[in-house]
Image (tube, rainbow, N blue to C red; front, top):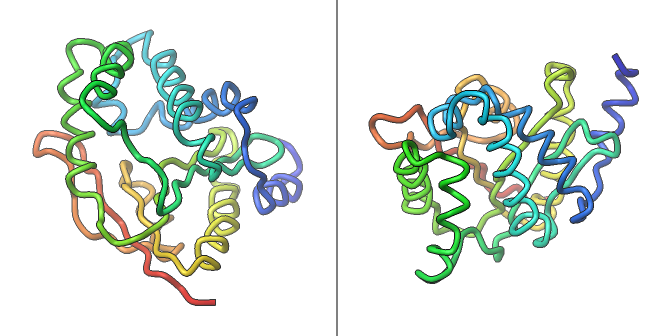
Amino acid sequence: MEDKMALLEAASNPHRATLDDAAGLSKLFASAFVDDPLFDYMVRPGVRRAAALEMFFHEILRARDIPQGEVWMSSDRHACVCWLSPDARRSPGGLVEKLSWLPFFIRVYGPARLSRGMAIAEAMENNHPSERHFYLTFIAVSPEYRGVGLGSRILKATLKQVDAAGSAAYVENSNPKNTTFYERNGFVARKNIAPVVAPPLVAMWRDARMQ
């Protein structure tokens, strides 16, 4: 294992990701979410799952998250957190743009699970808070370094910027194992927004903290 102090220091001092980082970060997120219950429910099963996850994260990072400037990564690429600012764009706009994404989602979910993915996306959009906030879309740590504290370090580092902006924060927790992690960082569960047959997807909110 790499030196623990060096790992923690890198996670505590993240820098903004660029489009050149998208390929490497997509591998990080794919490895971190391969055992996530909600992604297990949505994404095509079998030997094609890892490739589908990597494709999903690469496209989301490249087309949405990184260009909007709030994707933060440790220099060693073992930890990354994706935020969207209060004025950022979350999803495709008009019908034509939404339809243009359909082939991509078919490749990610597979034809048999496309309806699951679309239902989750609809639930997320319908339940998204109207209050101004920073939106934590994804956070990942290299699987071999889970439990070291990298996730807490990089999240705390970026929450300082959220607090400096006087903003609330919001996340949808797709894995019950992470509930305590978010609670330790000030998030409070509001409700499960997942469709009835799907694994839990819990909306969690963190009030603004004035500095």
